[in-house]
Image 1 (tube, rainbow, N blue to C red):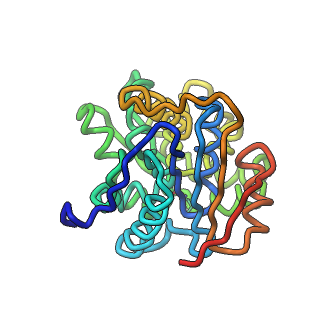
Image 2 (cartoon, helix red, strand yellow; image 1 turned 90 degrees about the vertical axis):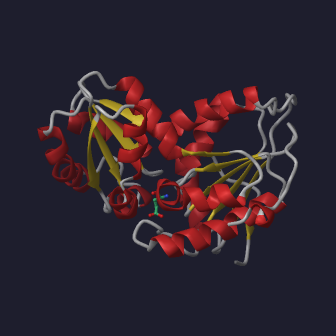
Length: 276
Ligand code: DGL
């Protein structure tokens, strides 16, 4: 994308942070941001009509991502956060080429988190089919430290299980044991939760992999990275009142509101339907 095609929007501290995902899952990132940066305004976009992205082609994901980025830039966000691991894995460059504001993504944040945690330099990554097939986490981790060995495992059944609310269900436990057995055999000491939905499975995953394996939650990692970026760019919101949260979705919002409450840890208000 040539430089001239970028949508130019000046960033100001009072502008909202734009967070986007294929659906409801990116609310785990909003949840982490709310804890870390309670005074920041947040506009969240969830492409609920076209979710899941994890089984779609890179071309399709890039096209959808571009539409979302243009929407949020028109809303005057000061930075963009790619909360969706799948979008970050296959469309990160397309998104950065489009954006005139700083862009952060969960993969870079998760990779840094893994680097800080691992002692044995054997790291496991779990994610959607598209994320794992892209090899994006492997590249991001090895860019920082080429001696780290990365083993990845796609866990496509986790997304529907989490959306069903089966966070501690026997079916989820058996599924997790099955998916994680090969990684555990590799003696990993760190496991990156490379999908928006997986932080909700943390207690169960911790039991399955054992206490010696550190779990890297990319939602927490990106919240810390966002705080640092706002500081260095002098974009932290000086306001101390209640923040403005708006949620934009592409399908009727009933399920988003119902499932999203679990992800965000509180009821969702201010939800708008967008035609795309
Ligand atoms: N948000 C996606 C991710 O983090 C999971 C859901 C989907 O497949 O769209 O990879």
